[in-house]
Amino acid sequence: MEALRITTDQAEVGMMVANDVYSPTDQLIITKGTVLDDRMITRLRFYNIYGLVVYQVEEDRKAKEVKEVSYIEMLRSTEEFKKFNRTYVQTVDHVEQSFNGIISGSAEIDVDMLLRETDHLLEEGRNGAHIFEMLHGIRNYDDLTFVHSLNVSLICNIFGGWLKLPKEDIKQLTLAGLLHDIGKLMIPREILTKDGKLNDQEFKVVKTHPVKAYQAIKDAPIDIRVKYAALMHHERCDGSGYPNGFVGDQIDSFSKIVAIADVYDAMTSNRRYRHAICPFDVVENFERDGFLKYDPGYLMTFMERIVVSYMHNIVRLNDGREGEVIMINKLALSRPVIRIGSGFVDLSKEHKLMIEEII
Image 1 (cartoon, one colour):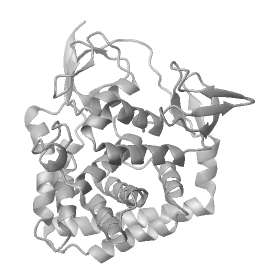
Image 2 (cartoon, rainbow, N blue to C red):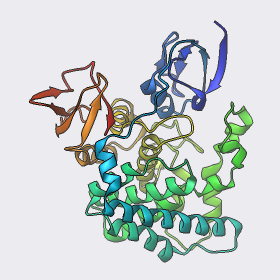
Image 3 (cartoon, rainbow, N blue to C red):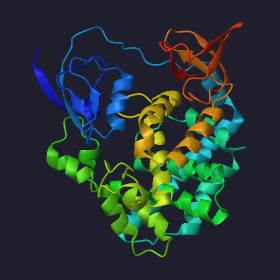
Image 4 (cartoon, helix red, strand yellow):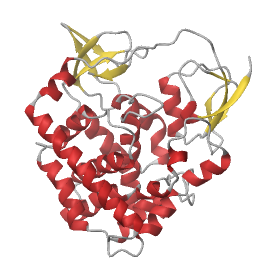
């Protein structure tokens, strides 16, 4: 079989890894000969692995589209969701106009206006869990910087409440989530949307977006923590992040919070190259590998509250069975107890089973 070097974005289920894959800190992530599945690809992204060598394996692959099942269909048909969705679309448009003005220099950052936009959406949610439920219903939007920024802003607002931060801090954290990725607008679109392999120079360009974001807002009269979040949201506590390779306390607290919200939204949203990853699978990645990369105090709070927000949702297991999440395992947050008919499945004890999809 012929080996081919690809970017992680080009990795597909069924490809066989041709060489051992190591993290930036020389930890073995995937061994040679492993056939990639969705979870392995998620692992590559989690470790910021930008490229790998694979064999193209010819085999029958699942070509089916994931079906929208009853609960999501029901949610999307409600007037409550339709109203939320209309406000969401309008807010994305306003964020786009504002960001373009900031980048072009034709407009200053209007903090009050931007926060009013997020407030409109937050006011339509009954609580944090309800907002997450609504976002789960609109995951089919294209991979746009504006959509992602709005999602991260909403998540940061809810996250700040979970952390019991003061109201003013939550306000500033919400703004940090909204502005964190503004530097992406200064990356050539042909690079961000390129279907083929990115070369080394293109990778370097993409990785400049935190610095570009900071430069775009550094002189604005806004909280310094908002500026730091733009600069540091790709830094990791173990030093494996960028642009500066900061570790631990070198990373501002807001940046640590935004980093978690950023990764969660990116993984649970649809992308050009993959379907959205199940939130429980993202939590499992956090449980396994996240405590070195992210602040443990923030991460633990986030994971505990995220999984609770999906209590009583209907899920599909990887063996095809469907059931209701009825109890969270504190020592294995990604592996709750599922009620299937009159029986119960404790995923913390059934290691071959996993939640494949929230339906």
